[in-house]
Length: 152
Image (cartoon, rainbow, N blue to C red; front, top):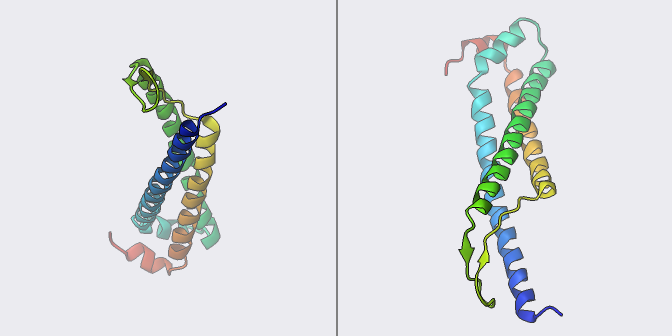
């Protein structure tokens, strides 16, 4: 039989975790959109050069979108590996704390869930791809001369 105090505490922790996940995910999403936009805007001359040597608008936009896909995938993989490494380090430190309602102390354990990380990675990947495609599509529609002459 599970006590009401335990059920209430776990419910509160889930709500707090959900709120912090929402806040962090929102900040990460805005940061990603900003970084992708700036990264592509700084490469206007490269877009102009690709267009000048014969790439179509769709090919150029897709090239930047595919590049974004690979960069995002690599970044997500490195982030997952770092999260697993940090959890091993934190768990090895054997940090102890005294939670309310429990006699004695217990170890603070961090266990990143692979499935949860994958679920969070999918929207990040989608945001990156959409942002890269929209920004590059907007730029490739400009005249080639304007793209080549634009300075940073």
